[in-house]
Image (cartoon, rainbow, N blue to C red; front, side):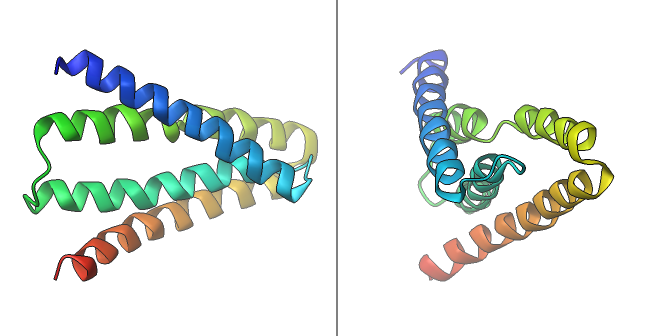
Length: 127
C-alpha cells in the first residue's frame, strides 16, 4: 500500500480515537479547569509509542509499512502536543503558574514513564 495512504488511514483513526477518548475522559471528570482528556490521551499515546517502538527495534515482525501506519499515522495524530501547549498557556493565563506547572510536570514525568512501561510490557509479553 502507498505510504501516504498508510499514514492517512492511520491518521484518520488516531484523530477519531483522540477525539473520542479525550471527550470521554473530560466528560467523566466534569472538570472545566484542567485538561484531563488531553492528559489521558498523551499518557496513553506515550505508552503505545514505547510499546510499538520496542517492537520495531526488536524486529518482532513489524514492517516499515506498519511503522508508517502505527507510529506516524495513528500515534502521530493521536498524541498531538500542540493541544497540550495551547491548554498549558490557557492554564497559565486563566489560573496562574501553579496549575500550568502541574500540567507540564505531570505530562513530562508520566509520559516518559509510560514510554518506559510500554517498552517493559512488550519485553515481558514477548518473552
